[in-house]
Each structure stands twice: as C-alpha cells, then as structure tokens.
Length: 313
Image (cartoon, rainbow, N blue to C red; front, side, top):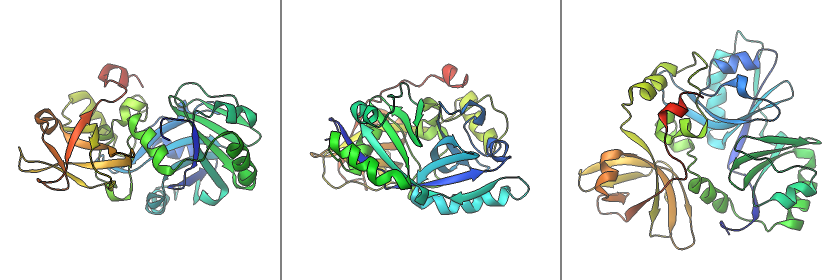
C-alpha cells in the first residue's frame, strides 16, 4: 500500500507543547531550527542537542495558539520534557505533554480527502494550511500530516475513511524512509549529531540563527566538513524489520560501522535508513546485526547534499 493512496494514524509519536510569552525566545536558544522562520503557514523539522551536539530528540515543530507544538517519538517525550524544564525555570514559558489533546494522521495521495475537510493541499515541504482547528502540513512529495484536535478526531477519521483506505504505520514509515527523512527514536537518543541523519539537508538546521545548545559542534561539522558518518538508504532481503539502533557491520573492516535509524517492511523485504561510515559504504560489504548477518544493498536518496545551500538556511 506504500505506493498508493492511504491514511494512517501516527500512533508512534507524542506532542510536547511549549507555551507562554517567552516560548519562542526560549526555544530559539535550545533547538537547531530557526523559530523566526515558523508561521501559521510554515512548520519545520528540528532537533534538540546536548552540549556535545548529539541529538536528544528530533521533531516537527509548528506554532499553535500561544506557543509551539513539537511532535516526536513517544518514548523521547518524557525525558525531553524533563530536560527542557530545567532550562525554562527563568523563562515565562510552560512545558507539558499535550499528546492527548491531538490526533494525528499521515496521508499519502490525500488531496481529495483534505479538500473534503475544507483544506487546500499544502505544496512544498513545511507548507501549512489551517481550517477550523485542523492543520495540514506537507512533509514530502504527496505526503501530508493532518493534526486534529482530539474532540474532532472521530468525525475526521470517518471522513478520511470515506475517501481513503486505512494503511498501517509501517506504510507511512516506508514513505518516510524513501523521502530520506531520518528521525531520532528511543534507542538512538544521544547517538547522532544532526548532520548524521541529514537533518540539515531537509531544512531542520539553521546556520544563521546564532547560539543554541550544541551549536558549536554542529557548525564545526558543517563548515570544516569532517563528518565521517552520515545517512544512507538501504534494502534488506528479509521479512523481519530491524529495530532502531541495530548495528550494521562490515566484514571488510571487521567491526560495526553504523546503526539503523528507522526501518519498514516492503512486503518482500525491508528498507531502512542507517547512519554509516562513508568508507564502509564505498566497500559495499554491509551486513545487519553481525559480520555474518544478512547483506544490505545501498539505495539512492531523493536529494543531494549541498553544503553551500544548507548554510544559507
């Protein structure tokens, strides 16, 4: 179903809310993305890093009401909330878990369904349209996130089901993998810097915004070009879907050379995003789980890395 139109509840993520008169100022000093670029018509990807540049979470962020909402993997929400609260003590900003206040759906090829809800189809990635409390965000070609207030969720789901078949979360994640959009999950918390998952290539890092936690390391990696590991898309000829954080090995190097970021079934096998050393990818001898594990094939990503364009963000 991943190649056809469908909708799927996004049950794997929760929503962290930051609200109050200082919400924007507070987040500007904490996140990789530029809060000043956000508007009612534009959302963004982003991350929260440690001082050493490793990501505690990655997310999609948008303004809502008197603050901002960040959608991230559910098992990251509690530790991220606890960490950010320590820094918000002296700000007029409140942080809380608003997962129960929203239902979110992923739509692929959902133009007709969105129009039936009174929403125009958002165009480029990050473009956002709103109507009577509903929020639609373009996330990649033909793919849209629909954010729905909880009290409207049942009715909206009925309307979606009238025009689209319901797919699985696996179908949605397969589309994310093919779009080359990496994501921090519970097992990979504090494992990657943003460039390792190509976050800067999908407008999730701003190099013009000034200081934020981990900024020095992230900027150094971008300008000095010393990144040894980055995101690749891979195929695997097995039915079992590997978990985030599963190790990838190279017999040529005799060791682990990377980790799985996210993975999904294709029906015949699996596709995944993995963070790997460039040297190991060039050798082309990659195996999942052990030196003797199933072999991985490198596939293309739908975008090119362009350092000059990325630093203009």
